[in-house]
Image (cartoon, rainbow, N blue to C red):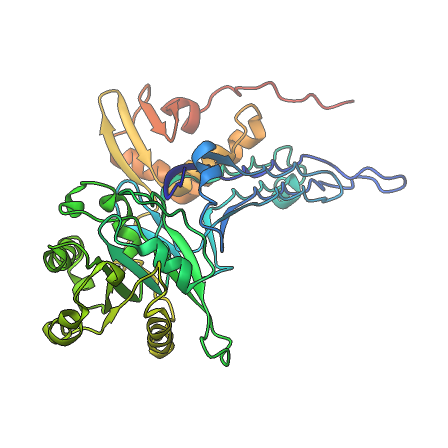
Length: 436
């Protein structure tokens, strides 16, 4: 089964916790704190590879998690950074935000990388919190959580030219004689269920440039509305540089089929109508009167027209030479399909305060990170947390909003009592007794 669309759930690695440690060496009294930092969590990185089937493993295992960072150690030793999770995906994969439907990133070149989720930073060890007032800090920071995101990965095959036509028009047969591909060929409709790729070389064997040709599953009338297989694979046509319309000229309504194909492409994406195009009338070996095609039909169409028979290999070399020469003329530098919004710079306060029925809510990214990093089982860490809040002006802001004794203060995922955090009368944890 060919997979070209999958939703993934990413969780980058959590940062390691900082260490609480003190230097203890012979003949060095009061060595001081030397707790090292925690390691950073691993990132989740996608890299583009030339293999259109790389989305299948993600379809089977969509939940991805990177390694967390190691804990810090004494002697200022930093914890080991978490290993990055590197995932190969096909060239042409776009990352879509499932909430907005917009393209976030486009891996349109082999080897291109995208950091989809960044790991959390490691917490600082107690060495960083030493000072003239607190010379023996007995607390350290916890590591930050890694980013949690979800994306829709959609493959849009990057091919230089692509065959477009109704089922059983001979597209797969043409691909097999023009390139080194070996697609499944049958005398029944919808033989091609998955896009097939082939490589076309210089017919004169002078140039080294090669180009990719794609055989896309057959379209039918109403494909832009989801009928048949066309809707599923129409997105691959957007990447094609040259459209090759393939028609079964042995059918009585082959002319009508050409205009139906153009109409379906226009309904799906109006820009496709202006794309470079070639018309191939295939299966001429089944037509009795070729003079009508050669004399009158060529004058009716404004795009280059070729008469071929894939089974008898008639007109193949002429088509190959023309197609290769046109492919050489096109600039193939890919453009990213990222819809960037206009950037506006506005002032964002460090925190905001809102009212709730039982008290007040303090919101702010910096405060939420501070809460996550703080180990509230340690009184020293809790006291440091309160000092930082006071320096940030949270206490004054709460008083301006009517904070008073007994009121609940919600910050992040925790709820505090106002007296406990700003008017503590009793230490929440027993203090260590000094040795006599």
